[in-house]
Length: 126
Image 1 (cartoon, rainbow, N blue to C red):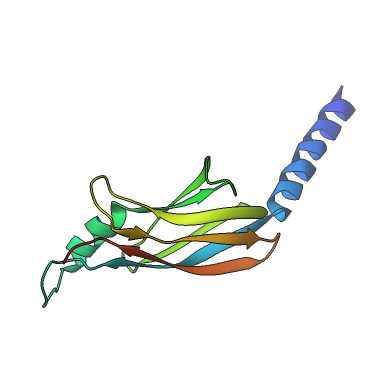
Image 2 (cartoon, helix red, strand yellow):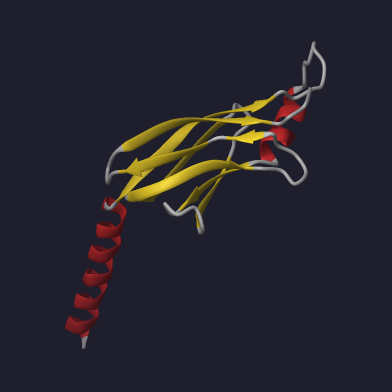
């Protein structure tokens, strides 16, 4: 019984580490703007934090029909997440009722590698 338990535990550990090795890192920056209808526009750090928190980077299948990962955007406009290796479409999730032009990018994540992208989102404010 003890041997079976030990073998089962070893199998679980090996399968978990194999899954981690089949993942890569997606990281990047976003440009969301304009933030104000007129210049000068100098939002506070707290306003920027709230604004970026209201958006997400969506990672979808290549047909862009299923959302597979949702990635939070940090106050400095960066994002970073470990995801499974594969081919995807990445875009910024629009805030309801906003958005003029939303850029999407086809990305490839390789195991053990970091893929870096830059995404633009035009809020339509003028």
